[in-house]
Image (cartoon, rainbow, N blue to C red; front, side, top):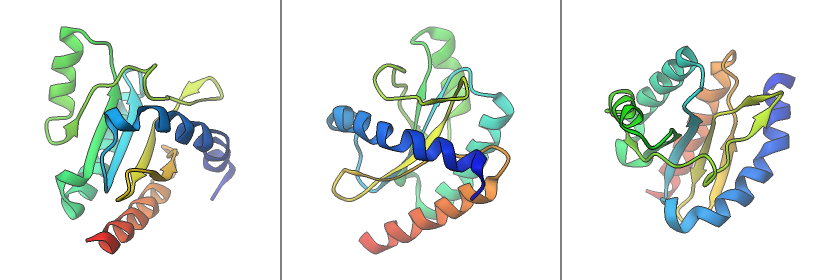
Length: 149
């Protein structure tokens, strides 16, 4: 794993896990992969991430994938989300309710696997230039899901 992807993960994963513990009763799902991002996330990056997630969702089932964007709660954002995420389960969660980490001045999206006990088992901050790491992460998620089914 290269430095561009390693440091954000080392720095922010513990913080993401601590923050999730505060909100897991409200937003937690079991045996679920979730993707968290903000409204000002690079649009081509988001398109690429969502395409990767959609392919993965087709393998493991829609019930095991949730998208948790952080958009303003206004009409335009709701329309945008319903268009962007029509093929996914999603819930718009305010940025101050579920952590969005910042690394080198940029807000980072992330994936997290919630195990069959409702705990965060794996957190991964992807690097938009290294999609193969995201695919490796998805393979590990798939293995964990297969163990519980």
